[in-house]
Length: 486
Image 1 (cartoon, rainbow, N blue to C red):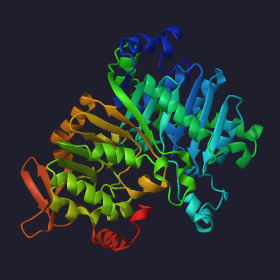
Image 2 (cartoon, rainbow, N blue to C red):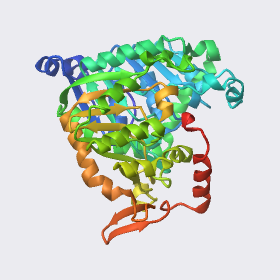
Image 3 (tube, one colour):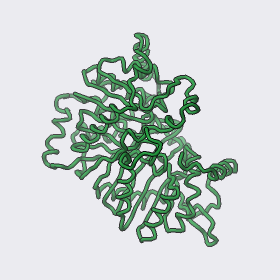
């Protein structure tokens, strides 16, 4: 299967699939509303981005915190290059914290006359990158965590996924459970305008001013890298799997069913990273707190890096004591990819449970032959979402932690979506008990982790599937006053 603009999706009639022609009739039928389509499956999420880029006519605007040098990372670099070759104006904004090893690649991309690449809050020392954190910690500790992929200012993919194999079910080592939504209509314009704000902000620096202009050899190396990726068996297997993507089938057959909702963009202002203590008008957090505080019946939260700290613990406890059913799903110590963050959560568990909050921790999924053939082994939670009262849903990049609140920039969509809220509620009712431990207090007020199995319930007195060294490290980190960093 050739991953190119003309071949990867077997689109026979390019004119018939142009975005404005496909979207206009439904927009007229739903004036003022935005259409959303949930992308829960990693392969569907990759396919949506690649397919939208393949049919782009005018522009592609892309912003991410992480872009890996792996199979899916280079395949998506390639579709951006292919779009630029067709005359599409491509703008790529990457946070510079995770671009190690990508300097030559992004410089070569930027050398294309139709591609502009900028780095957000760039590191001055390119080789020994750790030096930046010693010499300029206050600045470089503040990152752009935004994630959006917008085509022709008409369709945007927004959510929790970065760009990399582990986010798109293409990794043999790790699979992140994540969530994006594809959105069309007025909300796509809002995302596009927000991208303009970031791309033209004081913290977004043109790559050429940082790295210089790429040489002819570097551009040839990039094209060779595209060919090399296609020669890898992992890429061949992944592209073959994409041919069976449910999203691809529905898209090609014109059967994508969207929910038409009132949607609002919530995002931090890019100037947030310029302030030691950002003023409230630059923050999205007050808008999220205003919404969550309005919960009357239920509040379901999914956060992989859940650090409620003192204030968040108090707010959630007040909700629960007011009679709101509060349920939170996060990673267990065994499943998390950032143990330090888990320590910030662990110290708040008892207070949350005493207030009546229901806590669930995702089990670690160990490698099995069946999973490995699907391109995944260990699983970790990465989705960031919540629903309120079976009606309102947030999907985006915001983790329920101090770093998202005060250090990094974040973005997401607030959706008046009973359908998506119902799906999240059903997820808590049916899937969460099976795939997670419920953390509870026993009769002696001691923590226990209860696992539901086919044979019945099994209770653990210590963090399941961890060793003494992990638990000791967790206790030591939890004792440190570093919640503001997590």
